[in-house]
Amino acid sequence: MSRRSFLGMTALSALTSSSGIAAARSLAATIPSAPIIDGLSFLPENLDEIRQAGLSAMICDVSKVEEVRDADGTPRYQRNFGVNDAALDAAIGRIEASDRIFVAKRGSDIGSRPGCAAFLQFQSCETIGEDLRRIAYFHSKGLRVLQLTHHNDNKFAGGAIEREQSGLTELGRAGIAEMNRVGLLPDVSHGSVSTISEAATASQSPVVYSHGACRAIVDHPRCITDDGIRAIADRGGVIGIFMMSFWLTTDSRPRIDHLIAHIRHAINIGGINAVGISNDFPMAGQENLRKLNNDNQEGVKEYLGWWQAMQKLGIPGYEADPEHVVIPELNNLSRMMTIRKALLEDGFSQADVTKIMGGNWQRVLVDVLG
Image 1 (cartoon, rainbow, N blue to C red):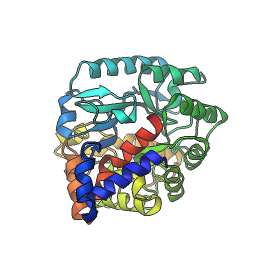
Image 2: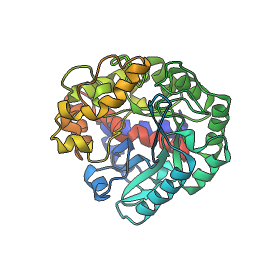
Image 3: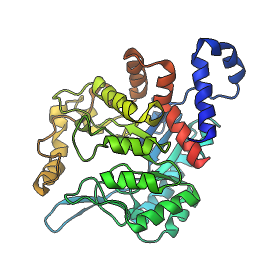
Image 4: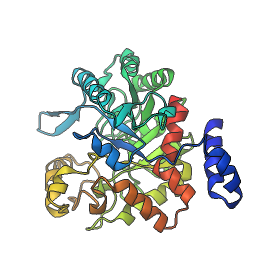
């Protein structure tokens, strides 16, 4: 952990103690109001939704997915260079035309001007291919977070959704070194167990698991192991707990307390400074479920084709079909305020809630990006 991070957390703790009241007055001018940060979401069609969601900042996936199919028909989802170079330009153009959001280049940009600070991300290194010069190229355009892989193996790293698991490749190690050099935050979400631990060790800066859940609660390869949580937390990174309910609980009815259980578990393993909130749905929630009034029984059907394709491949964790997609109370623009209230009601202190709801994301973004 950096000295800057330690001082920031000490200041936030002082604000919540009885002896810190006087100090709070003098610190008020230098400590920004408690940030609300989403560790992974997307640009909405209506950018005013960002204001309605109350976000101070977000890691914003601007990549574009192309579906390809193996010879046996198995679907895979790739983010290739040409399409995503154009997608990044288009996203930046939309952002620059809005007063609701701005492209953030440094962690210290959070709260520096009106609007939500957007840290632009690609959810795979397929955009890089074998040309590491593209890392600096995308950084120069405004990209600030780069995920190693998405579900499947690529030239950088092994994905979580593979029968045969693999880890970081030599190209991946060189890629992380280049990310460290130019100032990109490495994201190990969707990575295999080995990818997560090896990337955390290889990186000279913290890495994040921007969006996911805990495997100790739901035993699925898309969820992170306790060792993975420790590897990230021990190096100053953050684990973002997301909204995809079929990876939050195997109960037939998903509830907010299932989300809180993952938050508590990640804290128990990695500490209070290592946990944040992520969405991984559109800003206003999973759109088809919203149209169905959050009828999970009906809405889950759109996921079954992919899920059952993984069953046929023998991927662990896909043996039983999912029964739901969303926690209904969180599938809307008010989710962050609802989660904040639920955490307080569940016994978390105000200081801890401040960290979970955005303080930890802000810390790691400042540590890595300045």
